[in-house]
Amino acid sequence: MVTFGSGLRAPSTGYYDSCVAACTAAQVDLPGSRVTSPVTGTVKKFRLRTAAGSDPQTIRFRVLRSADGVKFTGVGTSAAVALPTRAATTEFPVNMPIQAGDIIGVDLPAGGRRANIIATNGSAFQAGFFPTLGDGAPARASGNPRGSTPVRFDVLLQADVEISPNQTPKACTNVVQRRVKLRRGKKTRLRMKLSRAQIRALVKQAQPGATLIPVRVIVSFRTRGRPIARFVDIPVRIKRR
Image (cartoon, rainbow, N blue to C red; front, side, top):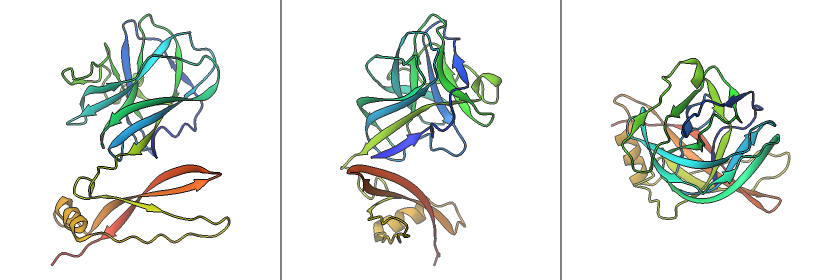
């Protein structure tokens, strides 16, 4: 599993109540967090942090896609679930396809109901789409422009993605998977070897004159019998001949 989205570290300090018509909220930028899926696979679980005091309502989790980072369209919608009205971090099992680069969001119902699922963050960009983005519908930009006050929030939503076994080095040239054994109190050294095909693809993707290329390493391990995966970006130095 690979986890991305909000770090869920900040408690909810803001709320939605502006969805007079049903709307979609999604995280486009959040410094310090990965808001796009690093891999292609299947979302197996959403994790949502809430504060107490939300109005009773049902929500739907979304997978959104963009060709330019400005306009988005829906590519997946979960079944409706009840929004927790207490302070908690709640997990919701799903089975939704996702591609590398997709983002996640949530559909909120009409009626201007209060939903305590966001935290104030002056550097964030939380896009809002009014009405909701339809799956396969024409792409649209956020109804609130980047930099405006209504978008400076961390949507407290996170996703666990099961990596597709069909990903090939050609389709995923900058992702390397490694399993490691961890010992308490001791450092673990990670070694990796890229194939020639991966190296050629990385060099081809690099900007002209670049000498460092980021390689995403997905490290998987088990703790208390539970499989965990984390990703780390490592700069790889290249020499052109």
